[in-house]
Image (tube, rainbow, N blue to C red; front, side, top):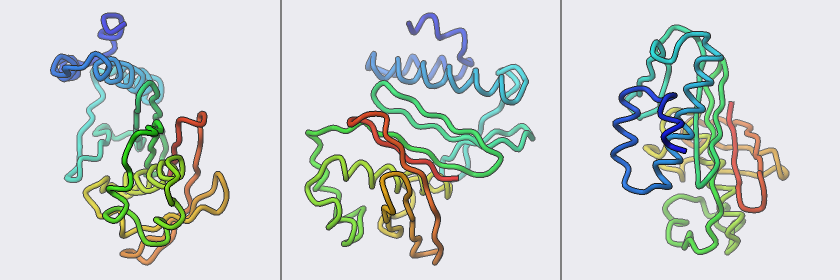
Length: 188
């Protein structure tokens, strides 16, 4: 499979691919980058060799070419989601790991109201986590910013309100679920 995907990867991506030790990590990287590169070619209508992706000071990727196209990518154990927009966006997807001891990070990443709403529910943890990460990626900080500075408020199963305590602003996100084992969110 990886051999077939190499033709869609740029030289620096091939080097990065070879650095991965795990076969699963190699496959995830090869699939996600191949899809991203093909999408770049289709959306920007230029060969992938001419698409220059750089990273800002917070490590958020952006397209150097003056296309006006913004993108974001997330992948987890067998799934990749890629979003394109004329506006900034952030997207996240996570596979539910029922064995993950998420209680260990609640105090550092979630507000007291969020902790109460999450309780001991693993699926609820992932719903809140993907919303936080999508918003932080949208803002361009990723996890360089303290996740406790924003609060996730679920309006219903698909609509999420984010209260940014530092910026004194609110943002609405969309939640999505691929199955009972995969949760995600997108912020535009």
